[in-house]
Length: 337
Image 1: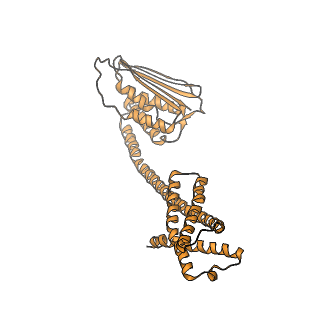
Image 2: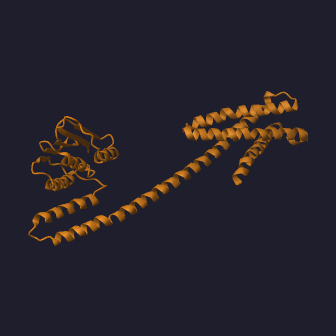
């Protein structure tokens, strides 16, 4: 209800203030008094025309303001149109008044109303503009608060989800101590699995040293070898990387997992990592069964997730080349550190 009243009262207030300012600016230099020199019917018509004309001009100003905010126009373009449009509105209003009074428009009476209307119109536009910007800032503030709240909820869910890995650790430890000490192989497997899970849990966000990631990959490869066939011919090469080089963790695991999962044919798997010109190179190649007729296989989400993570973490600073031949599947990943 208040907004409806403001919508109708604002143009009327603008008209009254503009009318009074023009009268004062005209009367003071001439030492004349508009209220004494004219009849009431003349003054009433004069005020009514200004009042009626104030509604379309304020409506136009608001429309122009919304257009400028939407298109993000420069401030000088915004005010340039206001400064040029206000005199046109002022001349049109004065012409309508003179037409109703049966008088001719005197050019000597034009400058003062135009100057006053430009100043008042500019002030009105600035006031409305600041109000709109304040509303936009309030909306952005509410959106930021919502985002922060969502982040807190996500963090809370993450903290709750940590319960499950810790529970799994406890179960693994229980199973570990239940296995007879003479059975070293299953005890070592459980210990290796526990270390891998711990690394994934506590190193899934911040950067780690490249050599720390390499140690994790070696353990992961060791676990994959336990369930691989004895026919597997594995070649692993990791060059020494200085400690100052860091990388986001768990980027190479999908490639290693994919290679062990689909290796076939001659069962050859080769992978290596080396540093060259400030870029980390990771090459992995596995043989695949030679098939004369390509078989459609549903693509997993591992490689797609990897591509998305690389786009987010190393946008414009990575290159991922995946090539599938007749007998070899090759992946080359380069990350500029």
